[in-house]
Image 1 (cartoon, rainbow, N blue to C red):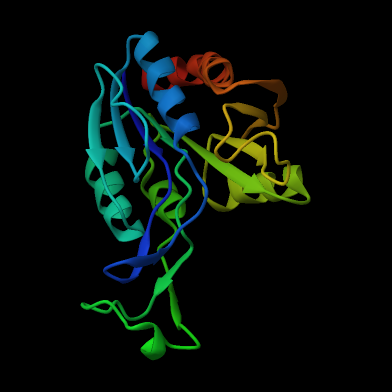
Image 2 (image 1 turned 120 degrees about the horizontal axis):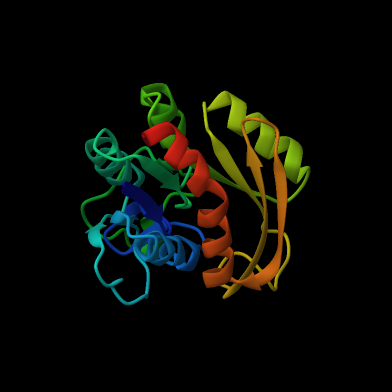
Length: 215
């Protein structure tokens, strides 16, 4: 079984030294890659800029921007059975990227942004019947309803609802707690634990669905 996972943040550049991004550390996605490898899957990991060691036995592709993430995910999508979109992709990018560093007295008071492609929705529109597509919903309010809406709108098989309003879990932390929701309406709460344990429980929960759809 072949598994494609995205991890980490994206960077959307203003000029060669400034960018917008988010606090994603990539730890959850890298933990999922290891958990998938432990299940004897052939794993490809599309990673934004993170400070983590390269996972052993995993095909690693490094990207920076949302557009690079889109290109990498789409190019690897068709050949994989299980696809997990764990990366925290920036929703917007500056409409102008300056080639030279802007002096501080020339830096614009306002920056106009363009919306980045919704990569997960694009993948959902391309999903075949024998593929399993999993998304993450990082929310600060109305967590479960928001996650369920995303699951339906993006044609997912599973979604992992993640409350990022808490300072001690989620982004940059080694700890997480999530709710796993299936397209069939199953909900499974996974209590606070190390991300390696959370990743294993997520993979163990969705693996039977993979076996049903792939074989």
